[in-house]
Length: 103
Image (cartoon, rainbow, N blue to C red):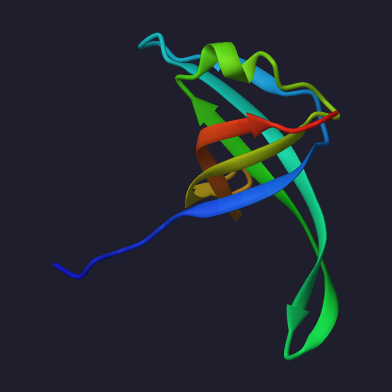
């Protein structure tokens, strides 16, 4: 089997009020959007990096309830494609680690 890696770490600001749901099997889910803005070096030049990434946190109810619109967070987890209702695909970060940063 070929080894695979799928880890992403991203920091930013929560742009919308998180949506919290409970699955039929009793697992809590928290969904929110994380906006990241930074300067990165590419080809020895500074470039602006910006993205808005959908985040899903599952099974970490206590921590997810401390996340609010405007929270600064550092998340890490794996990425996967989700198909939206309109049949378009988007990348989603499934966070398994979240750290609240200074407000």
